[in-house]
Length: 184
Image 1 (cartoon, rainbow, N blue to C red):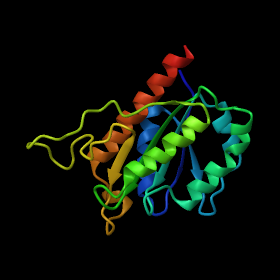
Image 2: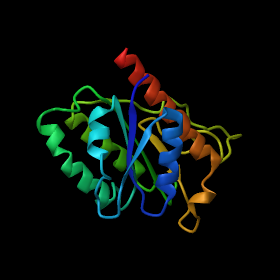
Image 3: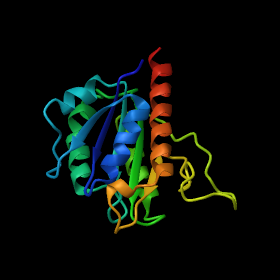
């Protein structure tokens, strides 16, 4: 079994709820980036000891939150020694609009993982794109690069759709399964 960590920032609680679903699917530990962009005590050690790191951030202005960016910049310390080389990486995001430039956020997370010489894992989920599809279907937002969710700007985290959360859970499971294959 692979050790997986989910490192994420959440501004309003939606991305936290998504991180919890990803972690449930992966059997992962949560490492929350706080409002000042810092990891909790033991956070760096948890990431260093992980076989897989799943990163999550809300999409703000077409990219990650500044708090996540602060974490990413601080990750230059393990980058310098290639400490995370060959770890499995993946990413997820949430925004208020259906598109919201979420793919730009996933590209940022992908680039960060490639700079760490990591191995990227996508969703492995087909999109719900038929006429019969409903907003609560798995991978309704239709992402292959990483998990995406959409939460209306006037909704609370408790109102997130079960389809988006189930997408996140299945995505987390896929990342953990992939990491276990690389580990074994």
